[in-house]
Length: 214
Image (tube, rainbow, N blue to C red; front, top):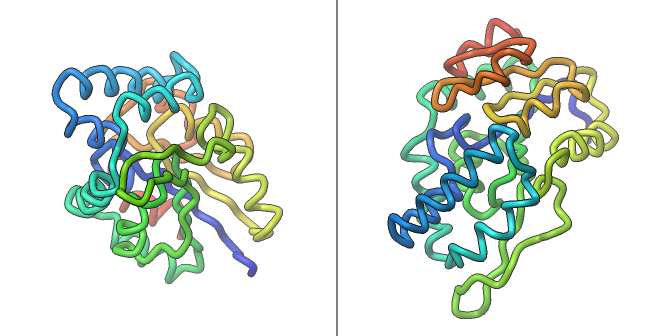
């Protein structure tokens, strides 16, 4: 497979308004939600390393398969309003879209299908026969800080794109700046001062990508 031009989208607070891990926490009640949301925010702002909270949040939540499926639908319900048209326009202009996320593959897959994105790079969750939480893929790069650039380098080796663009709202996305030809910060839902200051471009709706990339 060869992709002439690769555009890698973050999922949470970028392609959709929600943070999937926080929504999984919400169903466990306000106390769990508050604890998990605070950890997510600190990691996304770069105050703590992703690996310092990744396992802990899941251990607190113990998400069930049904909870993950419900979040998958919520991603679609809260999709960024211009996302679908933007993906269509970029594909028509020769870009290959990929979702690259520190979220969960099973939850993100329905949104990817809705948007017409054929490849999801995200963390697999594991469940037992009754649908209870049984762990996650601890080896996947996006479970730790610095993991997104690592995964992009592998994708570039596989796909050999002539241009690579990354789009996202968090510090984990900002980390991709040095391995992409262009990093575009995104601020519609959760504008972060560091991302805005250090991104080569900063947008507030995904449709603003079209003039940047076509």
